[in-house]
Length: 92
Image 1 (cartoon, one colour):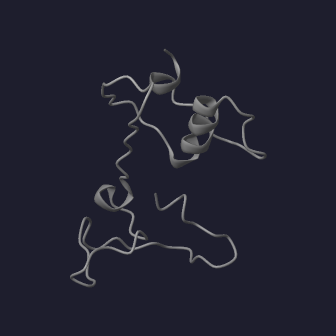
Image 2 (image 1 turned 45 degrees about the vertical axis):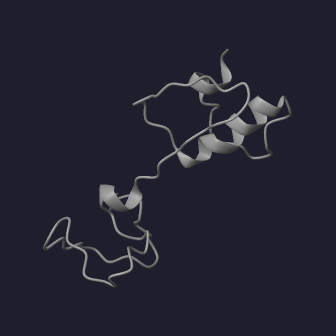
Image 3 (image 1 turned 60 degrees about the vertical axis):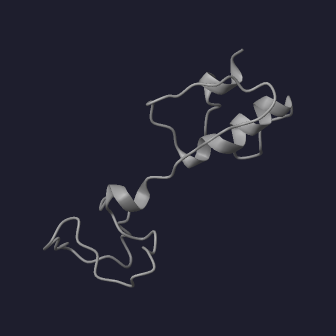
């Protein structure tokens, strides 16, 4: 995750991770800027008519949400789309 957050113009040459999985911030939650699994995990739930019940442990990304909704609505994929439809939901 450190590599994904690296900017060649603004980032330094060395990263120090002194206490992994440690968050020193407010008591109201995280800022979604930390590089820890508890901060970057996003639960995804699809419910409704035509959606089969089930569960999946497959990794999906935020970029997969828009193409999945487009496939469910039988409309064109969004312009500049980089994700893929979640086949567990779109295949009937």
